[in-house]
Structure formats: C-alpha cells, structure tokens
Image (cartoon, rainbow, N blue to C red; front, side, top):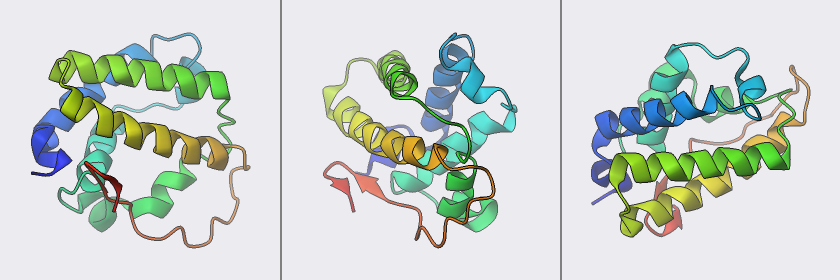
Length: 146
C-alpha cells in the first residue's frame, strides 16, 4: 500500500488539508505567511500531497508541477519558528484526521519536515528568482524519498 492509499486517497488528504489550514489561518505566527491565501489553496495542497504520496499525477499534469509549487514560496521569508509551528500544527492535524496511527504519522511527518526545509530555503529568494529546473514532483513512501 502507498501513503496515498493509507491516507484515504484524495478525500483523506483533503480532510487533512482542511483541518490543517483551519488552524494555520487562525495562528498569529503563521497567518501572515498566508496573507494571499485563497480557497483553492486547500484543494491544491491535497492534490500536491496525493501526487507526492504516490497517487495521481494531477498536480504535475494540470497545475504546473514542482516548479509551480516552489514559485509559490518565493519571497515569503519563512522563519525557523514559523517552520516549526507549521510542523506542530500539521502533526496535530494528522492526529486529528488519522488518530494516533504511528505507522502513518511518522512517514508523513518525515516528508513534511523535509519539504518545509526546502520551502523555507526557497522562501528566502525574492519573487521572480529563476529556479531553473527543480526536477519532477518528488515521490515519498514509507521509506522516504523515492
């Protein structure tokens, strides 16, 4: 089984995304990072996670893939305290949606730790920075990056 399947497919990941962003948008430390938040963001995150966790390639096929995602982080200036708070809220959202399933929680949080470091790094560059070719959308399984 893939993380995508075990996380409940697109619907499960949409529930995770909704639960998470309800907390993020109300969080004083993180809300400023999401000043340009739109309702489509929640759905797009679920589509991204579906692809990363070995589900359908919809994010790449229809939304611009890895490059598009990285561009959305340019100029955000994400701080380490913001990254850590993001991880805390995601951990709580995972527990809320999936219970305290350590088999699922650990690999999801390993991905989010890895991914938020990349997002933080990219966020330090100004909007309009040439990212070059970041490669395909990463795929993540129970053993990490594939």
